[in-house]
Structure formats: structure tokens, C-alpha cells
Amino acid sequence: MDAQAILDSLDLVAERSEDPAPQVYERLFARYPETEALFIGDKRGAARGQMLRQAIDTLLDYLGPNAFAANFLRAELRNHDDIGVPAEIFPAFYQAMAEAFADIAGEAWTPAMQASWDELTAEVEQIVQAPAQTI
Ligand code: HEM
Image 1 (cartoon, rainbow, N blue to C red):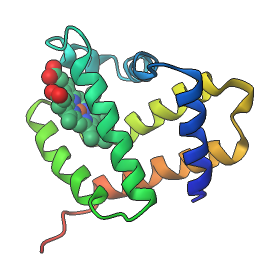
Image 2 (cartoon, helix red, strand yellow):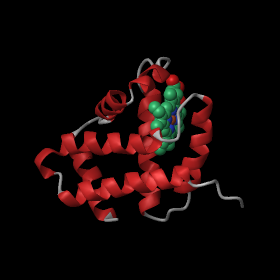
Image 3 (spheres, rainbow, N blue to C red):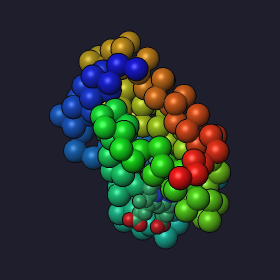
Image 4 (cartoon, rainbow, N blue to C red):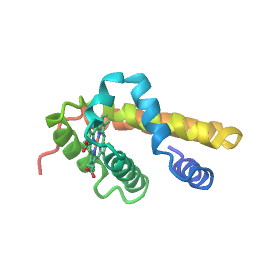
């Protein structure tokens, strides 16, 4: 995966949008309408914003030292299972990010960015499907 292309895409989004969260969740809810109701208590979007930040932090770790990303994703899977989020929505969340970020980046979005985000989504799918490691 071209990590630099993903980092460049995040820079673009930071330059062009004050808060990409509404667009990311719009994409997620469009594809998985049942997930919108899960956020009913999140009136001001604070949890949605925090969740997106954590997902991006996890992505940055994954592209860099990869110290916690895979285990953290699996731990969140378990936490989210309790609130009714199935595993397959995790890669869909990264997919929703890619779609929203591409919209925000507009003409500056490159084929390398698209390819890297596609690859990332596929890798997240692998991580959440893999059985938890026993230490
Ligand atoms: C990389 C993947 C994810 C990470 C790191 C993550 C992280 C988090 C965190 C940290 C919170 C607590 C936020 C807070 O209360 O301040 C949270 C809450 C929540 N997450 Fe996620 N999440 C992920 C994926 C998902 C997905 C795919 C869904 C499905 C729609 C989801 C649904 C929720 C819901 C419904 C809450 C509770 C919101 C509320 O308090 O009303 N999460 N998540």
C-alpha cells in the first residue's frame, strides 16, 4: 500500500474541510441506514467526531509503527458488538471515509489515493475477520 498517498489525502482533507465528520457519516448511513439509529444519543455529534478521530489515529499507527492498530480494532469490535455493530461495518466505515474524503479533495484526489484507500479497506476487512491473537 502507498502509505504516502493516504497521508497526502489526509493533508488535503485537513486543508479543505474544517470537519469532515458529517460527510463521512452521511456516506455510512446512506449505505447502512440501520446504523444511523445507533447514534440516537449522540445529539451533538461528539461521539461521532471522537470515533472518527480514533479511526484516523488507528490508521496512522497502521501506516507507521503498527504498534496497536490491529489489536485495537479487534478490541473495538468487541466493544461495538455490545451496541449492535456487526464486524463488516468496520471496513465499511473506512470505505465511507474514502468516499467522503474523495468528495472533499475533488480534482486533487489521485488514482494512487483511491487505490491505497481500497487496499486499506480490504486489509481492515482481513483484520476484523481474523481470529483474535492469543498472547
Ligand atoms: C475504526 C473503527 C472504530 C473505532 C476506532 C471506533 C471508536 C469509537 C469510540 C472511541 C467511541 C466512543 C466515543 C465517545 O463516546 O466519545 C465509539 C462509539 C460508538 N461507535 Fe464506534 N468506532 C469504530 C467503528 C464503528 C462503526 C463501524 C460503527 C457503526 C456504525 C460504530 C458505532 C458506534 C456507536 C453507535 C457509538 C456510540 C455513540 C454514542 O455514544 O451514542 N463504531 N466508537
